[in-house]
Amino acid sequence: MEPLFLKPYFQEKIWGGRKLATDWGYQIPDGDIGECWAISAHPHGPSTVENGPYKGLNVAELWEQHKELFGNAPGKVFPLLTKILDAEASLSVQVHPDDAYAEEHEHELGKTECWYVLSAEPNSYLIYGHHAQTRAQLQEMIDQGDWEHLLRKYPVKTGDFVYVPSGTIHALNKGIVVLETQQSSDTTYRLYDYDRVDAKTGKQRDLHLKQSIDVTTVPSHDPELHITEKKYGDSYVKTFVQAPLSPFFSVYEWRVNGELTLHRGAAPYTLVSVVAGSGSITCDGQTYDLKKGEHFILPFQIKEWQLNGDLQIIASEAGLTE
Image 1 (cartoon, rainbow, N blue to C red):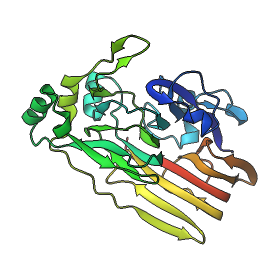
Image 2: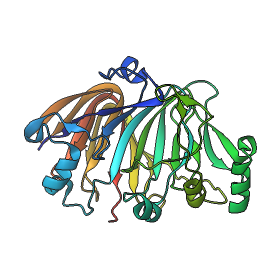
Image 3: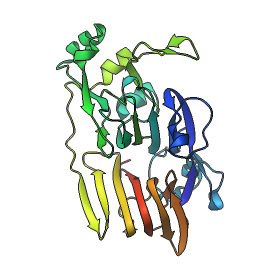
């Protein structure tokens, strides 16, 4: 069994740019490309296997036809989605629903997500959370367009990790590139979009004020992260988030300086994104070269893997709940 290397799917966005080509080396379409859907089974942009006996199948087809690759994990849909986002301009101020609301109103999963900040210009910040104390106050501040007092600014720099539970008002701002790990959902409720006009349509983008007010957590609060790091010689594994804080996914940084050998734990498969450096991975006696911008799945059958070189990797595993 070998790693399942994936061809990403690219999404044009009003706020996108060209860094996915200039900084990451991807062959991207013309236009303002904001999102690389790197490991995806979502129907709006599935990624495709590029190697081995499953070459040409997308991740959704793998999940449906070859559940053994995922340890026969439960669930109707592949639960996670890994992206790289290039915010050449600021994203809309937005919020995502939880599973219950999304299932009832959108017929898909909710959307809890997190960001590893790959790069951020000096003095960068996110919109993260709000200052309303009651839902009535939230409604009033939105109706008045009092964004200055409602929205909370949250400074970030390269290397930061931010956990964004469903119900959190948030926005990536100009000059930030992140790797996003999220539930496999494309439901976004826009609260505010800076009154900008889409050049292609000549219109402002739709807002979703009722849904935003329905699903926003009030009052806002920051989750307490307990980031840990375990050394392996000159390499380390950093754990950013896992259960019980996040029931949907665990996210790790693997920093390889020389050699790092890892073993499969309780999770039946692992999603892997190389975000810096170069090197190799050896599985079942076979070695595969790795470089920045590659994404792959380590299926259930691979129990141990050895990483070599100078590599920075963000890896994730689905939660063990249905």
